[in-house]
Image 1: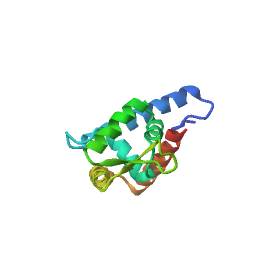
Image 2: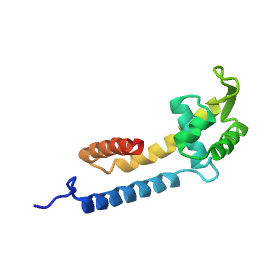
Image 3: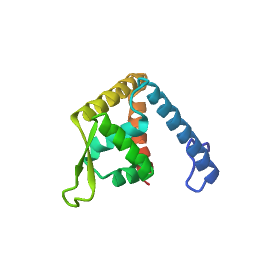
Image 4: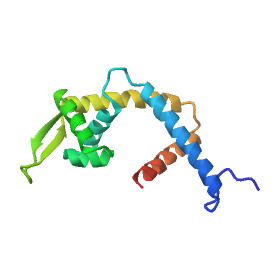
Length: 150
């Protein structure tokens, strides 16, 4: 009997599946990056803005941990966002020694415009899929999110 998907105990099959998933995700990520205009924010800075928009204000150290970058790298990203007036720094009311980073309205617009452009391309590309393929793609996206959180 032929299988399209490896059984849990089939480590070679799982390795092949992992390769296919990685390749597909990377190709899609590159394609989505190509939808961005040159000269826009770096992906790292945009990721920080997106996190601030989704999760709300945070300390630079919490952002660094969430984005898996060094505190020094995050400090540079945050300073760039502040200089561009896309984010702002306030004292943490609970700990006056710490600073809280929050997104500005200009930062929200930037995130929404960037996200909207890439989602419009993706939605257009998905029109060529069947209803079942789109449902499978949404399920796969949810599973990829779970994997990313592991």
